[in-house]
Image (tube, rainbow, N blue to C red; front, side, top):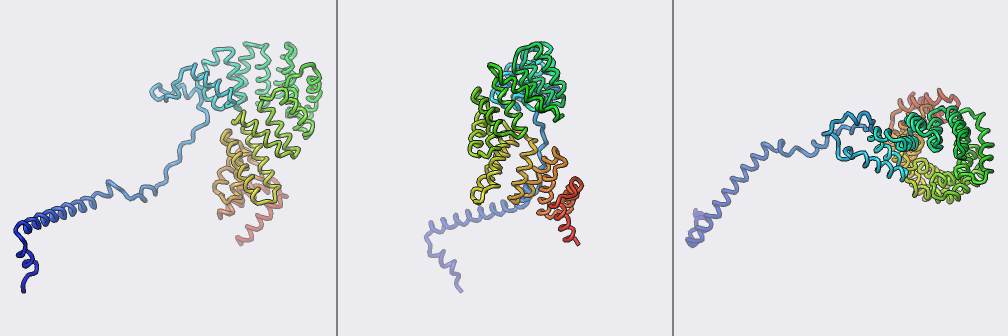
Length: 424
């Protein structure tokens, strides 16, 4: 039988047969090369290109927790070669940045820069007082007390230092010492702001029986020819603490008229409007204060409370969702500017629980419970989150703690009984 392939080639011209041979040789060479490549790749592929799923199957370790503020003494021990560009600024640059942040009410960042040049700051009387004020505003009254005492010893007639020191002592738990300090300053000076500060300290005295004396002092200052704006502000705060929101608003309005560029006054007036159920006015005032001082975590929290209050009172589902979302964003801003704000963490946990993000809720509620270790509402929310996650042991643990604190808590008692009956 004739070979068809042989007949085909016999009919071709010599140059056509030569071309086909070359094509065949080229295809054979390519086949050999491809075989070698496949063999080589199969032998080392696990080394040069591991499976993608294997790469991402490992859990990355959590990043180390870095404190908000580096301790100055620790920073001094860092070798020069290990200090970053940001840490290698000279004293003047850090001082300028400290002052710039303080002028913008960003006392957290002002503290960070000041903490790097403490020796430089303490070498100057003026800078010592300035540093003490930043410590006070940054929420570190215990650290502020010795610094301001040193500044006071160098400039005993400076009423601003005396006022800062008095507030630092009050917030450190020494209200009586703060009053004594102000009495001495008042006896040797004529600044009415000293008397206002004394009234404010008395109005926040831990002994509630002593607080009533503050009102007479406030009224006496306000009757003077030129009362300082802080008198109306502090008296408005005092009246608010007593629940007299109507009169509180009057005095806070007077304070904002006397000093319309002070965000503290505007924010406090917003609180008065909130308590008087003037929600739209409160919102406008809160936002105005936050435009001036976006780092005010208290006002961010109060704005969140306003939105959440509106959501709770609304009967329209769309408004409830919108206002709850606005509240959530405000609470996040509060936490952004004060990472340990327990009230904001609790509210965030509450909202996340309602959104079925139970693990996220637990993270925030745990932070809130660290500060308010006997808070039954926080424990109640934690219990609810663990129930939804199926962890009844943790849920029961929190319910038992609630009942230890308040044996008559019906919600906790009913939930405890329900879980126990299900377990049976």
